[in-house]
Image (cartoon, rainbow, N blue to C red; front, side, top):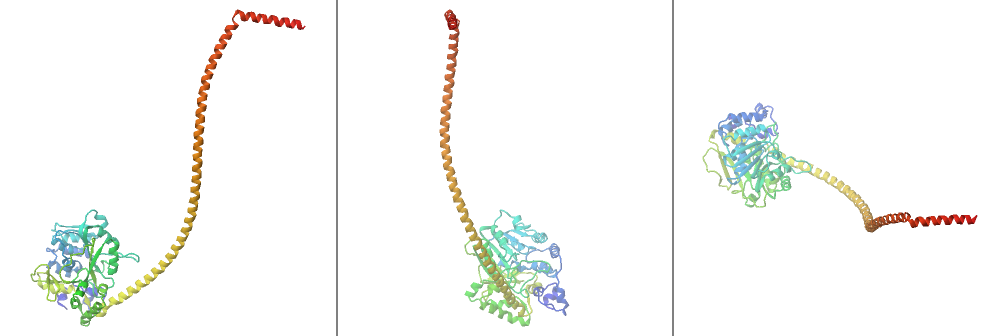
Length: 503
């Protein structure tokens, strides 16, 4: 048994957990491959039972290996941030802080940190881990529900869950929300795994009962970031695991400067004698074909909300992260081979071998690692088939669209003819309305004239009635006079004489 397994029998080989065949004849391997349930409760008990909760606490690291919580406690979770030159006064939002391993390191650096975790159990673990740090706030909930008007200099997502489908790039919704939380000059820091990488030999795998972030290809990430509104981004290779890297490589700069970083890859894995030499050879073949950005275990991605080139990555093109018990200056020092070395001091030197071995995924044979190519070929074949199907669907959709467009044009022509007829009818009705308005004005004039005549006739009638009354009075006066009575008597006498004469 190795030193690490002898001292800490709970240290589990990540490669075997990820799918490497177990040996039934070795009961130790079968025992170590089993993970306990209720990981959050185990974590909380571990943290509450530990006095020193600092990012490099030897007590916590030792107990984490014994309690099989290495994924949440490993000090290499902070490696991605150690590689960057982040200003001391930066405001940072950590999305998916888990049990607070990186959150604790950010708080110790003095940053103003808001840590977000959707799991209430893990959020409570993060609060326990960061107790005593007033510059750290841990929030439980979803990003779209708990934050509104706050803006940050950096948003950090380590091993995020990038939801993807056949038609959309992975994580567009999450990345878009992260973009909204950034200041205009802000940067998104992503640590993302490669879906094409071997699931059997190169990952620090989580528990069987916990679902971690789902990875993506670099092209998928590029499209997703562009769709989310990020103007530029940089990517760096991470080995051996994206969430807890022990080496970060600026592949383009390393190639231009002919930096020999490939021999270091073998040191990052615990390999069988068969795979020890072949692993480096395999990566040299990948390097010669310039496929590092396709088959790397994962990436550290810096996405910017602005077009100014980042100055966060400074120093060597290859950065190593190592644990040591010696007092060494903080920051990056350059090794003899030109690599940037970041030392993390653990005062209890006797646990260093176990810590280093726990951070090395296991490769039993190079065939385990070459599974990456098989998986990649299968993935590419699947993508090709999906592309072919998508092209067929697109062709059908185009034909359907052309038919609908032709029908639409015909319908539009009919509608235009109907509209033209309606317009003509409208103008005719308008002309009729104008004529009716003119007739109405004439009729109104005639009515006014009739009204005036009526009023005049009323006045004339009144005057006539007065004259008739006066005439009747005069007639009455005449009838009552003696002359009128005399003339009437005379006429009566004459009529009688005429009748007598006629007889």
